[in-house]
Structure formats: C-alpha cells, structure tokens
Length: 324
Image 1 (cartoon, helix red, strand yellow):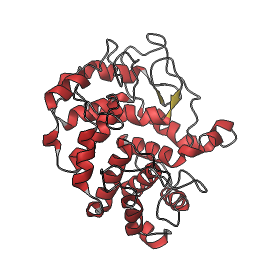
Image 2 (image 1 turned 90 degrees about the vertical axis):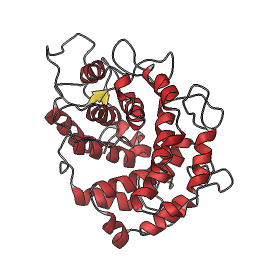
Image 3 (image 1 turned 180 degrees about the vertical axis):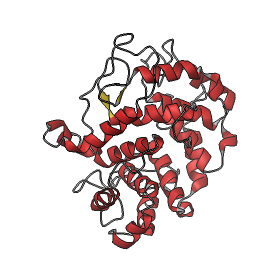
Image 4 (image 1 turned 60 degrees about the vertical axis):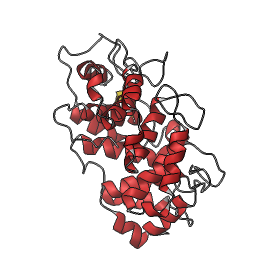
C-alpha cells in the first residue's frame, strides 16, 4: 500500500463540484486498490516507513465503504507477518525496527480480516508474544508507554497498547489502573488532553486519551461538558474541524474530533450536515481519494478518516464505525 499523494486533487471550493454532493464509493475503492501499483514512483519508497499503517488505513476505508474483499487477503497476511521481529513486535515494512504504532496496525489488520490464527501458526511469535512485546514497553512507575526500545513516550502509544491488547484479549498483561493515572496526568484545564503531562490540548490526543479511558471502562473520569465544549469549538465556518485553536480545518479531524464527541455522547454539539458537506467537498470525484481540504492532493490517510467521519454521523451506505 502506497502512501503516495495524488494523483487526484480535491477541487477548490465551488469549482467543478457537482450540484448535489455524494460520496463516490466506487472511485474511492478503485483509488485504494491502485495504491500498490505505483512502485515506480520515488514517493512510494520514501513513505516505506508508513507502509503497514497505510495498509490498515486502506483496509479500514474499504470495510467502511462495504467492499471488505477489495484487497487480496492472503497477500495482506503474508506482508503483515513479514514485518514481525523476533521480539514479537512489528515494523512498518520488512527490515524496519519494531515499534508500538506498527505493532498496533498489524494487530488491527489481522483482526479486521480474521487472521489472528495465521499469526499463531506462521508468525515469528504468536499473539502472546505480541502481547509480551507491548507489555514490555510500559513504564510500571507512571503507567506510560514507550514507542520502542529507545524510550520515547506519547499518549498515542498508551492508547495503541490498550487497543491492541484488548483486541488480543490480553489486557491483563499491563497495569491498566496505572495507565489511567497517566492519562489523567495529561488532562488540561480546558478539558482536553495533551501528548504528555503539561502539553497543550490537541484533538488527536483527546481521541487517544478518551479512547484509552473507554477501553479501561473509566469514561466517568471525563468532564464531558468541558471537553465537549472544547471539541465543538473545533468546527469552523466551512463545516470542517481543526485540531486546536487558530488552525485550519482538516478532514482527518472529522474522525479525531467526531469520535471523541461520540464517546462522550456530545455528537449533537456540532453541525453534522455542514461537516458532511465539507468532507464531500474534499473528494476527487473523478479519480477517487479524499484530501485534507478542498484544492489539495488526495491520500489514503485522509481518505480513511474522512470516510470514518461520514460513518460516525450516519452517512447512508456506509458500515457503522465504532468510535473507539
């Protein structure tokens, strides 16, 4: 799966848009299917460090678009397993170092296509080995998680760990109460959460922190009105959402903000119709794919989170998405 941007581009606002905006499902399916056929482009190889996550993004978009079999299942399994290390973790591509983020993507892919049994049979480690790798990255003193052996911590890694372990049914391998304590240490006065204690609130970090609390069964710790207010203020006049104050709208926040609002039952605090219109304006209706905003080039990252955002707000014809 290529992370190459383009070749399509979302039309500039009001230019070349159909009178009645609709999601061009077949075009998006074809766009995702085409991404692994661009190996003669330099950008294909420059984005190798994102390969495994790219497969997850494309696969998830296809499932939400109700085309779950649009990618070859066996080839997908073989590639995922080729990325596993002897320590149980997964790298972004064969030969890349193991990292929490790509280990999470690997687990999510295998669960999505019902292939955990293939991990147990043919992986360098079975699911228990993967669980031990993830658990080994937790700091048992403060509950945080490192991304890899070099020790960088980030609330994304904590959420990823709980997400993957819950999918593997191995959550008891880690200290969940300590993880919850660390999440709460990332809480700010405005109700949002940061990448670490003391860091500014950001919609992406809100999603991972609230998602971690949801997995831990601790959503009662969230100040729903305060956080809901901060999240709803992310909607701009265009209908799109931004990640923090004074930033431009970006279609990916349709997911980060929208799913966070859904988890705290505040989805009705934003204008869903305006959000849907903004997302649909970010499509390339001829070649498929969705961009961050009108006028920019499409890519698979923004495609999946745009489709997920539409699913969250109940856009017709899409598979319902779990906000966690």
